[in-house]
Amino acid sequence: MELSPRQLVMTAVVLGACAAAGCSVAYAAGSYLHRVFSMDAHVPCLVHHLATSDECAALIAEAEGAGLKRSTVAHDNEPISTGRTSSHVFLESPTAETLKQRVSAFLGIPTAHFENVQVVRYNPGEKYDAHYDAAAKSSTSARELPRLYTVLVYLNDDYEGGHTAFPKCGAEVTPRQGMGVLWRNLSESGRILQSSYHAGLPVTRGTKYVATLWIHGSPPNP
Ligand SMILES: O=C(O)CCC(=O)C(=O)O
Image (tube, rainbow, N blue to C red; front, side, top):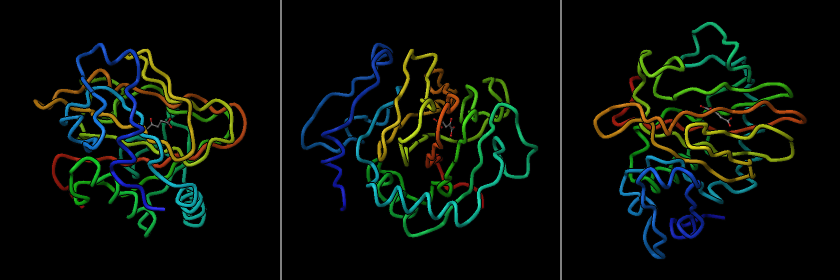
């Protein structure tokens, strides 16, 4: 099933407390969400039905087929981190491409600005401590990464724990298969946005899978 931007708009929701931070994501039937955002999504937003259940299942199978490895934080050649204990793999597959195309249409940013889709697996006890995606360490003074937006897509929800927390927004997302969470990491002037500080809380039972899309302001270096 293909999802139109209109269907996505109809189900977009702003996470509660951050709305006070000045973002006006108005409900505008017939508008595309990226226009509603007017590119100032300085708050995390939920996007329901961003991926179909078939796509979610395919991404999990493709990731398992390709082989996931213990996660690093910014680059695959870094040492492993105790703050990020999951495993992941970057995928280049027709399903990953479909997801990129959909998010690209949704945000109005070409897929050339996207990193490859990363599929992350968390077994019980595994987590990703609070951090900024636009910084290589969890402090804003650390080396910065040009990740303008992050889009997380939950690929399953048959597990316990594993919520995504935005501590500086007072918001916590309960994963639902196919649902996305989208947020901006950098302001227009390139400052790291406090609202983008987030964590993948420990999974307490079962296995969690998410797909992560990082989108840059210009095409990333190969
Ligand atoms: O798995 C989650 O809920 C959060 C993932 C995350 O923090 C990230 O990919 O940057």
